[in-house]
Each structure stands twice: as structure tokens, then as C-alpha cells.
Length: 547
Image 1: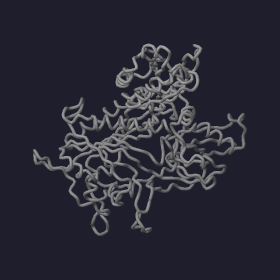
Image 2 (image 1 turned 120 degrees about the vertical axis):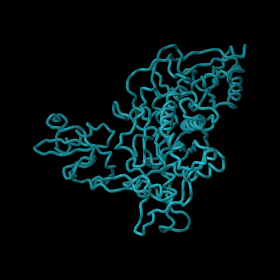
Image 3 (image 1 turned 135 degrees about the vertical axis):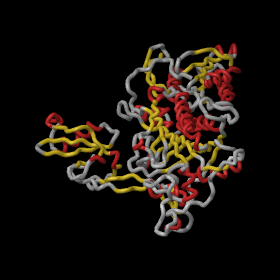
Image 4 (image 1 turned 180 degrees about the horizontal axis):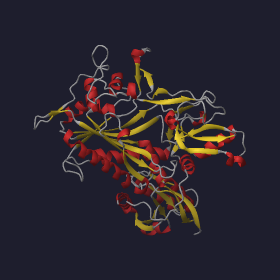
């Protein structure tokens, strides 16, 4: 369904306005806000929780529950089965040792001895600048208005006023701090003196916790940094209990936790987030074809839910970007308003993981620098991290062939997807007010499938039996949809409130309704108003939602 019949201005979207609307209308709040907030954590408000649930429900319906495992879908090499799981957040610590997270899941960070702030080493950019016969490297967090920050830092350091900005001599383009050897001439993003940044050091991203009464190392466990491992360790359980043959997809939606050094850009990079993941198990000979299938299918899903193809790209990773076990990875990326012009941020990764995961849980932790099938051995000649010892291979009951399945992993972020839908939906256009005068309105053009409220019901005025009839319409529709009732204020203002909430349809009970049992149905995007019989409201709205 195309969501926009009303022309919108082509001006760039302002992230500050989107964030403001999200709080004002109850989509998103800062966690623990009354205590000053907690960085990297966000709460979903009344509209936000409905939007997020609808995104997850659309994904589950389209990928799992609505899947046809009898016929071959367009582009698929063959029919396939889909099942779901809901695994625990805390798992046996050995899971994370054998998966590689215990040793390899880290970022490098630098601390500023002056400001006491911490930054990811690969997320600080800088430029060389010279003034007063001295050359320094000024830095700023990547993604900010870097040049403005560089200039402000340089002027302050050289004790110059803004009108003397022309005296700054810039050398080269913005460069990541990882390319700089030694920090003696580096000015931290919030520092006044040079050389305050520490050398990079490893920082494990997993949150530690303690299980049971044991407080020592033996009681240490972790909050999961991804949902995928729960699927891998349950692969044989699902296979045996469902009696499916491969190819088989196992899906899961759930919370994950990463102790990000610098969470930023609203909900884009958070410490607590939710994932929608599929681990698709198939024969090694067919894995490349399945990789192509899932790349294309997942890209279409975002477009079908209203994200413009102009704002999406499918980017195949270069060889030097690939994980050591990956045969291929493609990212679906979106042009978020906080990105620089022409840049995109990751929404979802589709990875061809080969047989790495099942082998690691069978045999033990694999060495990042070794051959993908070579187990890292300890001093005693045994695997450094011992695997489960369970046979996770698959035997085809028709051909009797035994093999370790290859895995294709479409892994989407629920919060990032929700943020992308919010950013895409935000629009400003012209619409008439109660007196027919054209005014700028803010409207969230969310696809009806994911809109928090499907319809709002209004009595035109609070008299003459209209509220009573409107409430009956509201209660009837509420059995099928999330519906909102509003009788406060002029009807034009009520329309505006629902436009900001993303409600696709408004139903108004007026004087004519009392005579012929019809109501006015207003479309959020086209502003078209039609008369509909009350008993047909549900079917008309459902048809429009699925159209």
C-alpha cells in the first residue's frame, strides 16, 4: 500500500523535531527520566509500545506464522519450514565461550583523563589544524556536526574568536582516530589540553551477572548479547520435536544487552534492545541460493511496510569487513536523519555463517585467526573451550546423507526498525483547519499495519445523541482493532492529534448518522472523506489496511 497521496515538502527531516514529537505524543521516553535518565536505555510510551508490538507482529506473521511450507515462495530454491522459539536471556556461560563472545566480543575504548569521559576508539574522528605555528589533531564523536565541533575546539584551544576562524589552517579531511599513531598532539572532544586521551584498551560488551548464591567466578554468567545462540543450542531439540526436514528456519524475538561504550543517536545504539532473528538451516550446496533469497526477501519487507526505496540500500560487505567465519554478509541500511547526507545506518544484517556456529558448539571455541574448522587447543592439547560434545549434524532420512548444515541469518533490530518507521513516517504538509484555512500539519504516515491506533471515533458535537452512537461504534470496532475515542475540542484539532499519532482513519458521527446510520470516514494521507454504513466500518477499514 502506498502511504502518501498528499505531497510533502522535500526539505530534510529534523531529528530534533522527531524526538520531540516522540515524547510529546507518547512514543518514547528517556528511561528513569525523573532521576536524570540513564544513557542507552529507553522506555516505550502508550503509542510506542503499540507501534513496536505491531512491528514485531508484522515480522512474525510475515516470516513465521504466515509462512507457506508446502509451496515454493517466489525466489526460494525450494519449500521450507519455519518454527519459533523463546529462549532465556541468561544461558550457560560455556555457550558464550564456545561462540567466541567471551574472548572476541569487545570494542576498543579510550578515556579522557581531563573530562573523565569515555569514547569508542573507532567512533572518534578528527582533523589536523594549524594556527600560531602549532599543529594539533582536534576530535569529535563520529556522526555529530564534526566540522563545527572541530572549529569550536580549535578556536578555544588557540584562544581565538569566531571572527578569526579564517586563521585556522586545515590539513586533510576528517580521519578516524584509529589512523593516528600516538595521542600527544590529539585534543579530546571535550578537553582543553593536548594528550589527555589514554591508549586504546579492550572493553568486553557483555553485561556480567551472578547466578545463585555463589559470588565468585563459578557463579558468573552474562546477559545475552544476541538471541542467535539460543537457537543454535536448541537446533536438535526443534528438529526432533517438530520432525521437520531441512531446510528449516527457526525464529526468535527477544531482548539482548550490550554494554555500549557510547550509546547515541536516540534508540539507534542502545544498551538494552530487542532483536528479530532467523537462523535458517540448509544444505551446504544450496546455501548461496538461500543467502540471495533472504537478502531480497528482507529488503522487500521494509519496502512493503512503507519505507521508500530511495532511503534504503542493500550493501554487500567487502572481504575485509567479513567476520572470519562469514562466507558473505549484506546489510540493509536506512538513511536516518541523524546521518550525514548520503550516509546510511544499519537496520538489519543478513549473514551467511557457514557451519561455524553448530561446529563451535559441538567441538569447542574456534580461533579467530585459524582455519574456520580448526579448533583452538590449550596447552594440554585439548580444545581451549570444550564444546557440548553433542552431535548437531543432520542426517537426511531420504538420502541418508549426514552433514553439518549451513546457516543463513537475517538479524533485524526491533528498535532500529521502529525508529526507521518513525523517521520515514514523519511529515509536514498543508491541510485545512476547521474554518477551511490551510495550515501546516505534522503527520505520521505510518503504514496501517503498524500504526498504533487503527481508527479514531469522534462525535461531531457532544449533544443530540451523537456521543452515544459514537461510543457504540467505538466499542464495536474495539473488538477488532486498537481504536481511540475522543470528544474533546473542535473536530479539526482532534484530526490533528490523530495525524500526529499516525492514526490512518478517523470516523465522525454527525447529524446525518442519526438519520441514515452512516458515518464519515477520513483518510489520514489523502484527506479524502467518504460516507460508510456503520455496520460496514470494520470491513472497509480492514480492506484499506490490507490494500
